Every structure is written in structure tokens, then in C-alpha cells.
Length: 142
Picture 1 (cartoon, one colour):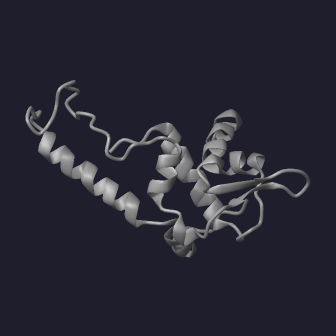
Picture 2: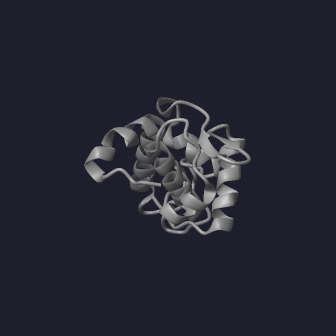
């Protein structure tokens, strides 16, 4: 499965926010530094995550971004949908325009299994799980 850059960045920024103290706003500038996402691109992603109800934006001194829902209620699929990444996209791995169950490319049925697994993975896992493994991978300080 190939993620778009926007999808990769959205997952990256949400994982960083999940690692932070709950309810403590994080500034976009700090997220840019920690994630390596260019400021303009990050701004676009953050707007989408706010519009999807995954983040809240707090303006003014002491403002920034905070999670809009508990970690256990934010699935990877929610994040991907917020940036219009379709986990079930019918893109042919062979590059055929007409690839389907009725007209399959040589890898169609194998690739279908990969896409199905990825969709199930994204629907099953949450940001809470990211927070739980942080002691193993190191807690990023923003």
C-alpha cells in the first residue's frame, strides 16, 4: 500500500499530538519542527483534521491544537478519511485502467487482499495504541 504524502503527514502529526500531555495545546510551529512537515503543508493538513472533528484549534496566547476526542476514539481510518485518503481505492497495481473482479490483472486478487488488510488495520487501530507504545520507542518532546 502506498500512502500519499498528505496521508503520511496526517498520521505523523496525529501520532505526535497523541504523545503529548492530554489537553495541552501544541503550536503549529512546534509541530513543524518535530515532524519535518513544511509549514504551509502542515496548515492545510491541520485545517482538514479540525474540519473532521479530530482536532480543536485554540487561538491566542497559549493556543494551539488539541485532540477533539479521546485517543481511544480516533482510529487511523478517521485520520486518513480526514485527508481524503481512500483505503479501499480501486487502483490497479499493474496500472490498468480496467481492472476488476471480471477483468483482473495478473496481480489483482493478491493486491485486493493487501488493500483489504490495510482497510481492516486502519479501522481497528487507534491513537491510544500509539500512546501505549511510546515508552518503547521514546516519547518525543515538543
